[in-house]
Amino acid sequence: MATITVPPNYKPTVKEQYMNPVMLEYFRDKLIKWKAEILKESNVTLRDLQDDGGMQEPDITDRASAETEVALEMRTRDRQRKLIRKIDEALERIDRNDYGYCEETGEPIGVNRLEARPIATLSIEAQERHERKERTQRDERE
Image (cartoon, rainbow, N blue to C red; front, side):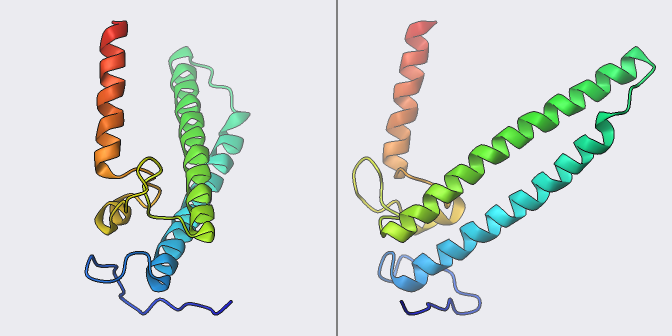
């Protein structure tokens, strides 16, 4: 397989062929860099938790504050883990050559939406339908 090189300062546009090899490689690079950044932050968080984990605060207020911080860090790590899974799924879609197309309609998601949210799996219209449906179901339960 030929290696695709993304030109310096390249930004995908709506004027070029949708999901051409350079555009796909651009999004692959963007996703890989995003994942590396999250993993780096995650490792810092993990080190911080390990460093602070053995420390017992004598004051009950300080202890409560430290426990709240640990709980917040754990929620952050969980969100990061889920985000990494979504990034991996997007990379798999690139490999399968179906990246950038709505899971629901098969229509292009759009360059601008993917630029803002490269893990998007739904077009804006499909996403809005999902959100309306969720709101309606939530309203019916309340």
